[in-house]
Length: 500
Image (cartoon, rainbow, N blue to C red; front, side, top):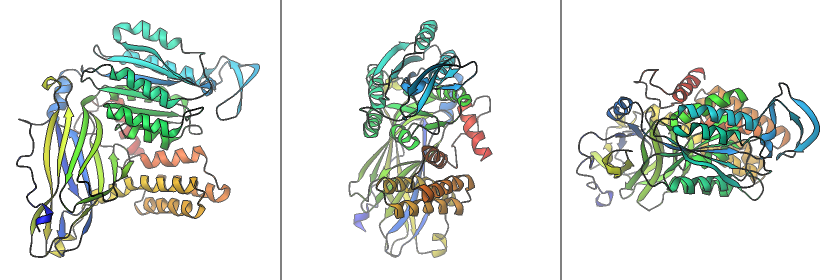
């Protein structure tokens, strides 16, 4: 029994005096395990949310906390494409897009870039007195358009945004844009939350690669900068790639299929960025002897596969949770193996020690705060007790687990392994069918049918499936606030889930 670290527990549940700003809780799918000496595989849900006191304090201040937001706007060649042909007139000239297709050059109408710029101009009206706004454009190269401007610079901001129209490059250098945003925001060393709203209508081209973009996203995450990704165009963007860029910083990826969605989603993401109440959140787990973690996921507010520790013997484990927003609950799921306990012991055993580290902007002189907790589980000889399952944890873990299945599907597809590709798609369909998720099941059935007929998967089908599987069963919106207090982004997520 000595190797189980029965007494490797914290003496207190937190180092902070008074009520902490964040609430941390843990739930296993099986709270009672049989003491039969056999190792036990369980699913663990870790929940993090802002305290009600912190949320009320934020509202009392009028939400006038500052945020530094950096807009990354794609100005590659494909942004010339006219989406609204009203009053558009052909010039007789053509242009070859990044996708290799030939497009007619027209005057009039509304281009992708015009839609992006007009949407960006609308969010300027949402700036609070202490907010800071920067903007970077990128095509073959990335460049700073303006930096560190405030609402008092509104006219200057609008003029800068208008100046973007008509300036295009050929390629899409996403990684360079992200790294430039990192350098721009990292110059400001205060504890103000920093967030990138990143927009593209394509994927990396020219000298850029997906690998470079994912690595750049990790760099921003290490510096406490969150990335919210917007992919515009179901036939052009690579949704799984954008999600990998955002996930390491705790950011969310949104797919925009239609032009009329752009302005409202852009504004909603901007407002959500202004609701950050806690920043630079990290979860540290110290596993007790014999405890092992395998796959782990984010399950709320969206489903993201975060990685696999493969049962590593390394007992310290850290996850970057990014930034915590006022109206949002965050849930993470872990596939855990616990050591067996013989029948001479009944009672609780501590599986790991948890430590949540974070900063509260504008409080505690920008000093890091810490909450500590133990994560116990109960062992018993009562077999009936061990049959009780927390179905919510089990089901939500399985829905998040689909993201790992989809990565396996992509690996098989890229390797040209037809048998494995079909097997993984069918496995995903089976999960959704069993859990009565017809929309998601249909999306992957459409993928399977296309692959069986053509041996290929179009971006439109890929994005439809992967974006649907990313939508969490629980949005995690904290319902005890009134509709008036909820941001439009939170309302949109809530209503989307109701419709599905």
